Length: 221
Image 1 (cartoon, rainbow, N blue to C red):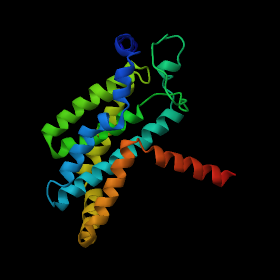
Image 2 (cartoon, rainbow, N blue to C red; image 1 turned 120 degrees about the horizontal axis):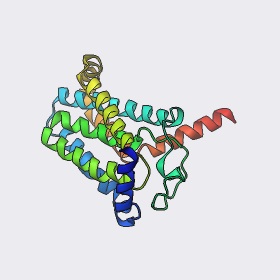
Image 3 (cartoon, rainbow, N blue to C red; image 1 turned 90 degrees about the vertical axis):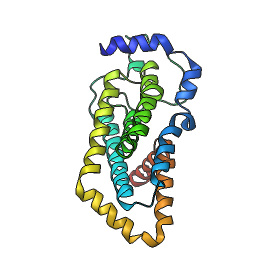
């Protein structure tokens, strides 16, 4: 079923460059998610709401890092477009794949996690964000052969579990509440941090990843 659904979506949109351009455009794919997060952050001056959101965003970070670790170290299956036996139709991508494993999708993990943060604060906005992520991000990554459908399901479970755990667990939330109280007279610093975090997340933490690689190279050189 996993491979059958992959082949059907690939035959439908695997070479559709217009869909690819939209699905990989940071503004198009990210605006509903990041717009909702910013709106909820500034909806009111509620420390409890913001502490829950920060705890959820922390869970998103951990889930995304874990998804990348899985791709490097737990190769359940090869990335579909790198499997010559599948004969997939796909588009040319401007990068090389340094991770041959595809489970789970780190991109889907990030965006499903952010959608979960929105959902826990606003059910309507959250459902719309989940729908957007499913159609624009998740289905496109299957259609172009970047991931199997099971990779996407794994991403959804991983992201939602981490976000809900950190959102509901009292210890991270209380810690963020105390931090917000400590910075109550300098909230502009917190707003700036959240802005930088969301800007980096919209680019899939690419700058942070590159910085980490450069630091590792410097240490081992």
